[in-house]
Structures are given as structure tokens and as C-alpha cells.
Length: 251
Image (cartoon, rainbow, N blue to C red):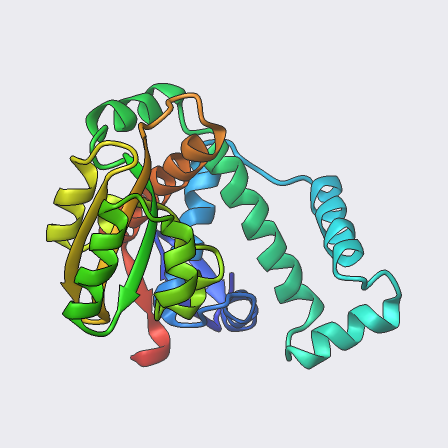
């Protein structure tokens, strides 16, 4: 793009001003994030994925509406508070749209293959727990549960986990990767309604109640969206690994 370009990615030269504007539009303003953004844009171009001026303007308008920034003065103050100009803001918005469109364009058969190959890894369990500081108290609570005492009531009364206590110990849906090995093994082999524990962790002694096991649903739009984004990130990461990158700024 000119004599003052300081970064060259796969023969795409970016001049100093444009590169800095791109970088300022990123939440993570490291050079590695900048390379990732450039590689992502190159991936989009190679796959004929583009954002029209109308799409970009619509996205900006929707953002301003959702953030209560319809007034020009309010929008300008928003940019000023974040020390970002209009150009890097537009670049950031365009990147979001490109990423979304590129992920959506990932073929369905690639998503189906990931789901088929990762059935166990994609399983989730809906879980409750009671956490206390000492083993004796945990054993006493477990004995009460064995006598069919109400788990939610005992969690409210005894659990030391303030984030879940008022919800009767409800943690929510967790995947295998969200648990340490011993707990994961016990929880995922249990039947719905099973009480597990006490089990010791760094935070204390835990008693778990398994509400239900959730198998991956290949038609779940949220799951498919997450997998498409993961696949896109893998593709872009591969491009970065293979990219010819020259930063003349440091020469």
C-alpha cells in the first residue's frame, strides 16, 4: 500500500496508519491478534465472503440503537471514552460481520463430523451441589439425603457456595471439560437423581445431585453455531501458522 507499510502478511502490505487503525479496533491489541484479524479477512476473501456497505451500515445502526447511541453526540462520546476513532470502529464492526458470515459458511457435513467424533466430549450434565468446609458436616448432610431429605432445602441451609446456595445448589449444565477427572467420572456414569459424594476439592467437600444427562443434539442451532466458530478459528489459526509475515517496523 505504499512506502510506509510496516507489515506484510502473505504479500498483503498494510501501511502504518491502516494497521494501527485495525489494531485499535481489537479488544486484544497485540500483534498476534492483528495477524489473526488479517488472516481472517484473507480467509473471507479467498472464500468470496464480503460485507456490503449496506450490511455494515445496518450493523452500525443496530449497535447504536441497542446501546442507546442514536444521537450523534452520544455516539461520538462513546468513541471518545474508548479512545477509538470512527475508522477502527467500522473495521471492528466489519470484522464481526465477516467472522459471522465465514462461520455460517462452514459446510454442514464438517459440523456433523465433529459431532459424530465427539459424542462423549459434547455430553453435558445438569448438576446441583452442596459445598461445606469439613468432611463431618458433609457426611451428616449425605446421611440426611439418604433418608430422602430435600436436596434444595439442605443446600439453602448448609452450602457454603454463596453463588448457588440461594438457587438450591443449582450449578447448571456442565461439560466434561468443566470438571476435574474424579468428579467427571462419577457424575457422567450416574443415573438421573443420583446423589454423589462427599468428594473433596480445593474449595471444600462437595455433594452432587445429578438432575439429567444431556446428549449432544446434532440439530441444536447453538451447538452447531459454536462448532462452526471453532472450525473457523482452527482454519484461521492454520493460515496464521503457514503465513509469510514480515514486520518491517522491527527491522
